Image (cartoon, rainbow, N blue to C red; front, side, top):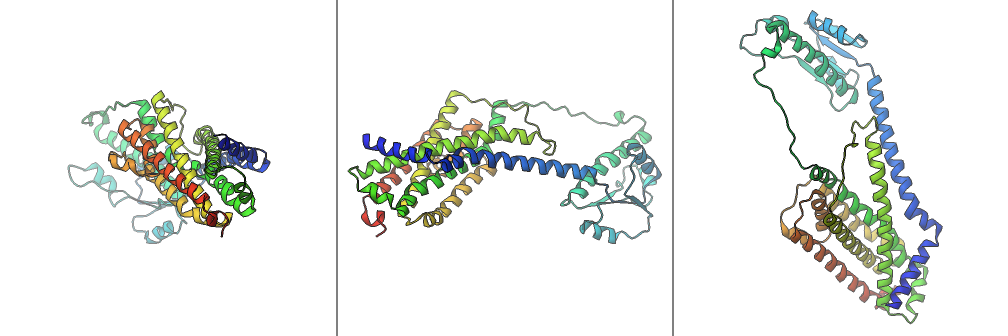
Length: 403
């Protein structure tokens, strides 16, 4: 135990005395996340402002006089609106919409006003709207003209035809939301946070783990350490525990930064969303489950990175070998973003994947005790098995001295 503590202290001291390492673990993540989210928020706000300032180029064919009058009342800015006669060819306009030269084309059918006035149970006349949903300017113009102009025109026609449109309504719809606010919040967090947590935990352990083992082998300091009168199992445990501590600290920096920065970005004008009413509350049991799963996941990540670094001859080689594992971590995290709740208990026995779905289930309050115990047991067991393999590799002169 004393030997493990000695190796642990050595590793932590080596990290914390290195100013560059401290910067990369504690400061750089904050700069990157805040900078990235600020940039995204700024770009979204600029894009929204640009769309609002844009004067749409809109062609309207065979527009009724009432519709033209209504448009002038709703919006006095008629720049960019071109009215066409009923016989004008619109095929080239549709092509220009595809080429992003024109934003919108609205076509009223022939004798539209008469068809609406004489409507008596026959087919409804159709107003055709052509736009390009993949272009922001065109999509914005479509939303404005359909939801504002055409809807207002439809309401006016109803008033003209029936006098009071309230008398035409067959029934009202009154919606009442019945939900558990805590569970609703947890479900929203559960679609995003498991992915973020699994990724940041792995990133925090990856660079440190590669440098701690493969880096020391490449620099030759590992050989000197192995020659000391310390059990190699103690060296393994000391290094892995140090990596776990540093990985948790690094992940905590990432998570805290995201928790603080994401709501700020979401509240920006360009995002169109506001989480000011969001209430995040966890029960003591949820906190306990989250801690256990995250500690087990860190232990497994550190062990997997350690086994890769042990068999690598250099930092470059270890970085190459670890990429497939990195993609697996990304894939397991993404599965929780788009998948539904997992009820198959057997899936909670699959290392890596089980931690992601368990984190999602914990946040949404859906995890059962069986699922939690199975996830924790399989994760810690898998990490223990890999740790034993690392210990055996440390006892191999061929592996440790790149013979």
